[in-house]
Image 1 (cartoon, rainbow, N blue to C red):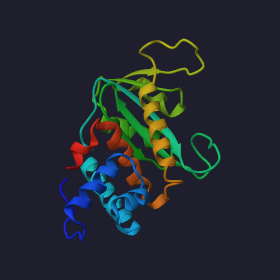
Image 2: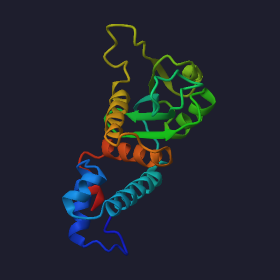
Image 3: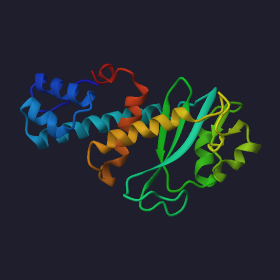
Length: 210
């Protein structure tokens, strides 16, 4: 992605900050380790997240085929939110994961079928296999162009193929990553979410940033 233009930081310090960003260091810690002002590091990290979000937006038209896991999750808030409406001040996010491939995330207003199905139709190639849990918003997939399989979490011995472990692993990873920041402000949540997506999709993120 190259260096930041018009930055007063030396190329060496920029590279050091990028290394710390890739390693998952917070801007505050990176500032003290690199000997730069805390606000400078925070601004630099914000710009990196904006660049990542723009890169992912450019790729967002790519469709997924094969075996796809779909799921929604809720971020933020202190209380465990109910599903669907009234999720206790949390931010609902929808995710699609191609098995053996990438994840795609989108902040959504709600988890209704009216919201979720158009995203699936836009991102998933017809005739693909779609795995979901038993949330009612996915009912319409049963009469769609996809081969739809439901996961029953209460069944102790799930079919080897019939799971959404991949997307659930991503949710856990993303929430663990965000907890490091002691809560992400809502205004920047989308950038942090895209950063999580980018880290999950790139086994060596340092290559992506240089």
